[in-house]
Length: 260
Image (cartoon, rainbow, N blue to C red; front, side):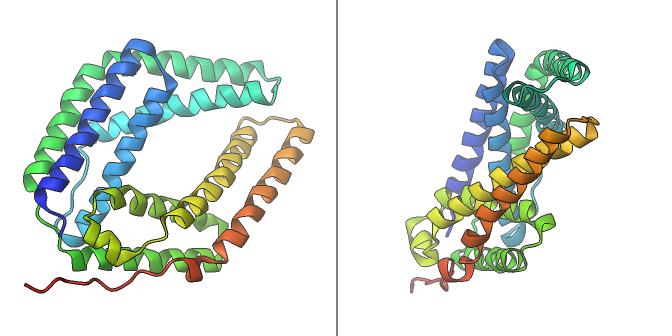
């Protein structure tokens, strides 16, 4: 069973970490702080997915979602600038646009940081009051359901579904550390394999997003676009042999409910 105490510990740790990353970004404008802030939100989403299946639906408030969204806008612009530098893109207008986004959005984000912290803390406290114990049988059923979905995604290998598949894997991985040893022993999940698979999909998706960014920016550098097309094909090819082993590498066992 996943006790209320363990769930509360998980929730408050996420909240505390988010508070810290907000403070750090306000003080230092550190891109890594935004990244880690978004990671914490994704961990919460993984927990919400499990809780929604087993007990009651939980969600972030509109204000808390805005933190994630605005941090994402700044983070994307920062990555775009890194991308411009890495590939020596000759596009002054595009670079200027991204620098403007970082500057303006960072100022707004920093000025709202105190309000954001209060909103997130209130949201976390409200969720913590509503949580209920989650039974082992339901946790295993949730993992089985998601593994079955992932099996279809990777056997079908439709590129339009790979990123969503990665999100599902991340949900499973984010929840796993908070589970009792008796539950993880029951699941016997191949964590290393799932990490390998999600990382491979992540590398492909990053290149795909960058390519889309170039197209949207109407960049006319044909040589560079061709380079990215080849990189997309290359990273996609690295996923296939890993995904092909999904059924043999991932098998969720039935829950072993201890006798009372």
